Amino acid sequence: MNRERRIIIALAIGLPLCFAVFAYLVQPRLIRDVAHYLRLTDTSYYDPYILAVSKRHGVDFHLVKAVIRAESKFNSRAVSPKGAMGLMQMMPDTADHMGVSDPFNPQENIEGGVRYLKRLLKIFDNDLELALAAYNAGPTTVKRYGGVPPYRETRAYLKKVLRFYSEYKNNT
Image (cartoon, rainbow, N blue to C red; front, side):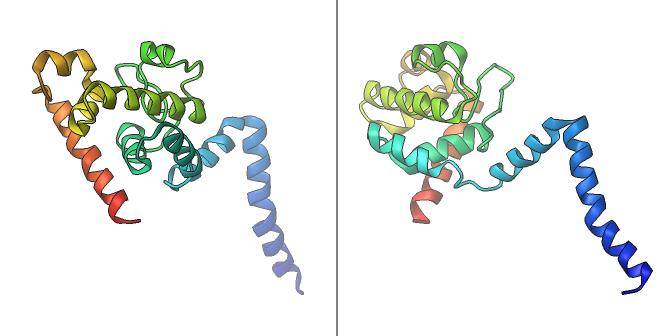
């Protein structure tokens, strides 16, 4: 093997390795962010946990997955402008009420979010549209309007979740 070829091979192997070590030493969060991005591109990453929690609480797996996709696009670190946090975008008061101490912990967030969704389904006699509207706008608002509130955001949210829900149900 000639000298130039050995240099090219050494650079091809060494540079990415040096970059990775440098990135980790200088900016360790960069490595975690890359790993986090890779999880976000795989929408089945949380499926085993979503399935277990959904079964335990009697809520459709596909519905929970559709809510997570609409709420956070599977980003466990998502924070909305209004302060909702994590995969299922729980508001701080709701998280506290559901016993979620760390809303950025995917397992806790899914557990609390599914329990909350189950509660809303019970409050609204399993009316999926009303329960989802309440998940977005709050149960008090849905009761005040006697149905889906006339908010553009809530109506768009409802449409999005139902579309994702249909996609998930039809692809299994």
